[in-house]
Structure formats: structure tokens, C-alpha cells
Amino acid sequence: MPEDSDPTYRLMAEPGRFEVRGSDLRGVLRASYSGRSVDVETGYFEARSWIEEYAATGRSSAELEARFLKSVQGNQGVPVPERIWRGRRLRKPPESSQDFGPPPAGETPLGRYNAPGRPVLYLADSLEGVSREVLCEAHEQRWAQPFRLPGHVRLFDAQALARDVFAAGVFWALESHRSGFPDHWLGVRVADLLIDRFDGLLVPGVRGTESVRYRNVVLFSPADRWLPWVDSEEDPRLVP
Image (cartoon, rainbow, N blue to C red; front, side, top):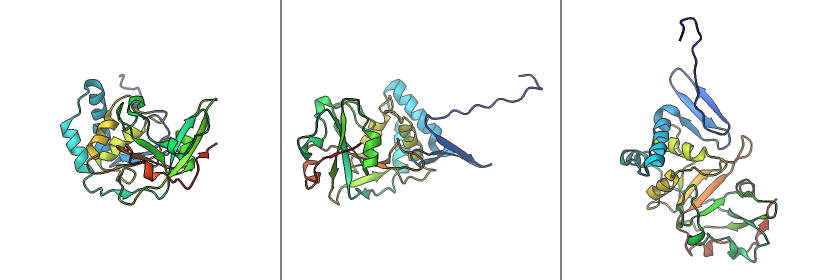
């Protein structure tokens, strides 16, 4: 570079709208669509490295897994929101509330937090969340069914992570793919690391805005236990 030329700086950014805040000491990324903040000096780059290594080799770092588990040790879990919604896109109205269970194992594709053939239940804490998460084609309709889960169901609270813990950087990376889910399996591995202690995850919705936020609930291994969780006193609702 010639001595009299101006220096060049480059910012590597995640997709989606966010803010960069900093001081002489730290830099913080904040996602306006989810409300999550992450300290870039305490886990963000390591989380990206974990994803890149996992995508390239199919092997997860034992060192980073141990660091992730250590960073979530104090998380005791939270109760499920009183009322949550299961959304589906359908070509015709559902026959009953029983149409809102998990897909059969043979029809379950890779998702943000599930492997192919391993169903989970993805739900939202509001109809607004269902509207933003369930994207329909022209010939389809968006339907939602309320669920009420028992108090003993415990969720890992991924929304309340302090921005300076490693786990916050991991979930930031997983949530940054707003239009779909990451093209790697790290979210599946994260779920596997938590499944022995928790019944599922409480995570911020990734299709929100600064003024409209919602949360998603991911329930592990629903099998047939989801049936009593359906709020059968209410019929399925058509969501615009």
C-alpha cells in the first residue's frame, strides 16, 4: 500500500439487519430482528469456527462442546409460555386439532434443530409468530392450533443468555440464517447436547423486527406425548 493512501477496513457481517456498538474496550453485535446481542470478543469468532469446522468435516469439536456446556451451566430452564401455537400450511382446512402433531419420521427433513427422520415440534408464542414463520404458497392456507403444556415441561432459555457467554455467540450464528435454516448440522448437535436436561428450547424468532418480536418453542422427542398438550377446547384457527 502506498504510504499516502488511506487505510482500508472491512466489516464481515451476518445477513439480516443489525447494529454494531462498541467502545475502546469491546464490540457488540445486536440483531434488531431478534433482540439478541453478542459480545464479539467472548465467543462470536469461536462459534463461527465451530460451524465452519463442523460443515467441512462433519465432526464437532470436543473442546468447543465442553465450552458450550460450561457456558450454559447456570441455566435451570424456564416453564413453557402459558399458551403456544403450532402452525401448519395446508391445502384444505384441517379435520381436527389432531392434525397439528409432528410429521412422521419418514417425512421429517433436516431443520434448524432436528436431524432428518427425528421429528420435533416447532411452535410460536403468538399468532404473529405463526404468521411470520409459516410461509405459504398461493394454493395453501396458514392454520394454527393452540397448545397448553404441563408445568413440568422445562425449556432451555436461549433467549436470556448474557451477551458475553460463548453460548450467545453460538445461538447468534444459528439464528442468523433468517430465510431458512443453516446448511450445516450444528443446531442439531446443540439440541443433542441439551436434550438430556431439557424438554426443548425457547429461542427468539428470527423473522421479527425492531417493533415486532416473538419467541419460538422447540419441543424435543414429541412422539405421542403431544396429544394431551393440544388445547382441544379450541378449534384450529385460520391465520392471515
